[in-house]
Length: 464
Ligand code: C2O
Ligand code: CU
Image (cartoon, rainbow, N blue to C red; front, side, top):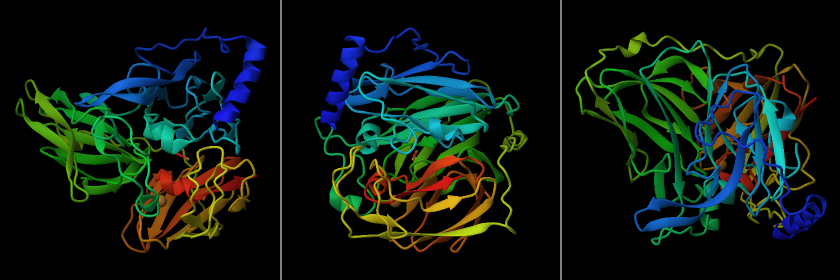
């Protein structure tokens, strides 16, 4: 990869002189209020930051230069533009996870756009059709780049949204650091063949258990993005009434309180939380999965009680997602399995060099210039149902690019007809996901546990 970078760099230097890219459109580093035709500048950077008490961690990657990648705010139905400037020593791209946009803007190298090499830039422009919580990340050498920090949250606002007394955004993720606070190997092959390799340090907004003040008795809108490369959470709120309003960027048909709600890499959740009346009372946001439950962050009630009622929160407006026509829908069978087939380790976008997983028996790491044939060719405007079966002993957060699906049924549990882009399928589960193929192009479908994705659990559909 470095070879490629250098060759390309030399070419660039010959054409442009040393600097390369003109930096006329420097973004507003403070606010990042984004919904203007002026592009937001997202420049990749390698920084030092404090993630452990022992001292700063080197080789942390971000956009901008001030800690965590900025929360990008867009407006539903209004044009958004961003210039990615690549200032790290590795090709990259940006994928806008969950946003339905033109294929050329989807950020998948080889399939839809060229690599953005060191010193080069790429201009993204699209109009988000849906309001909700989304996120952005590279789609190249992702285990390394996301593992080192490149995961940011997107809020798409809707002017008709209900009013809250406060809003918080949480970017939940881990880091694989040693006792000295420095990065250790991002994965272990034996874990990649199972759940994926877990981080050693857990953060919310790059902090250990941050606490935020919110008005006592007030209504809080909490947007949570699960951006870790591996970890699945069982989410619970203690100390306050809380309702799930939206999942994966879309309102839930029926609100419910999150009691160990399972959420995997790539997913998002929006909660309405009614703060306790008493000043100083603390609400904790917890992950109760596994043997080491963890308080992720806390909210502290401040001031005199607003005396609000969580049932007063008006419903969120549905997003304009086309309704699947079940009568005419064609079914696509999709089996997730383990494999022992080897994947050549000459991938040039961060292949791990292992083949552990497959979709319909084909292991593809998603990063060869000559991709495997698409899983299916879909006709523009027609309805489809993906019948997906998990033949493995692991859970997989399966993510479809470019289109939103509706969860129709599951073989193992009652499901709400959620609209989503990422479904966390359990072992031995069969699920049916319906959608209208209304966005032309090549769209990835992959597990968002990045080690699974990069060791075979990737495919794509072609809409023509
Ligand atoms: Cu969150 Cu293929 O991506
Ligand atoms: Cu997986």
